[in-house]
Image 1 (cartoon, each protein chain N blue to C red):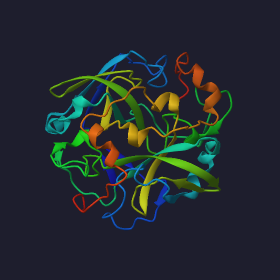
Image 2: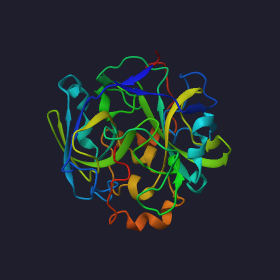
Image 3: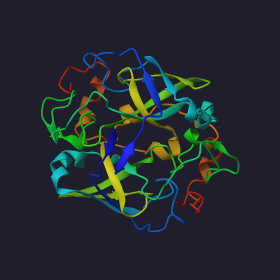
Image 4: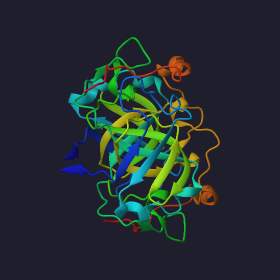
Length: 159
Length: 159
């Protein structure tokens, strides 16, 4: 049995899934905080030198999944694994956010697109040499990318 | 209780943690396969248009964790969350790999750095607009980045 346990909480201004940005780029400038449970705080050392973090978290408002979904940024159904929809077999979310400051067990972050009170599973440093492949292209999303900033969530993935 | 379940398996040439590359950039050109369990295969539709994928997986050879570690690319100890070390409170790994071809329930991938038989938890499309922040800097790893390609794992994170 593979079980995961929250190591902290993500705090954001978004208390309702409806109307929130659908990705960090859509959440540009939105400020939030990550609070780490006390026993994990020593693991934050050396993080302040990184400009960006990868947050892994649990889609706590998400239940069940379907293998074909109509994503926010399209009008036709797509294979689930070709989307970032929150209802997944393992409802683990990933966001790359800007690290503004580290203050004890609190990380001040920016460009955050998740629901308030989201359970945090992991923090990894964002490293361009590992995480920034050159000349990446993005399938059906390519045409839709320009609309990310404008697109907001509706209730199609509500519990 | 938050439990996760494998949706497939990652196949690579790396059967021994010792001597394997430490990140996809170090695994440049290394070919592997992702096989999805049959019930999840309909979710792969539309994936073939993406050049890169984000794989989330379970560090199945990893047990326990320490909040300060000496990472492969350094000689001094660092806070765990400022590293990509596999022994983590939630042992979930993340690799960005190149998608070469989709063949039924099999994804042919390249630039893979994980152990053979690694349990797959999720596949997400890599989308530059979401996942490629500009002007990212990478703390203590910045100086060490050039060495990634040369650095191989030893047994310090062995079970």
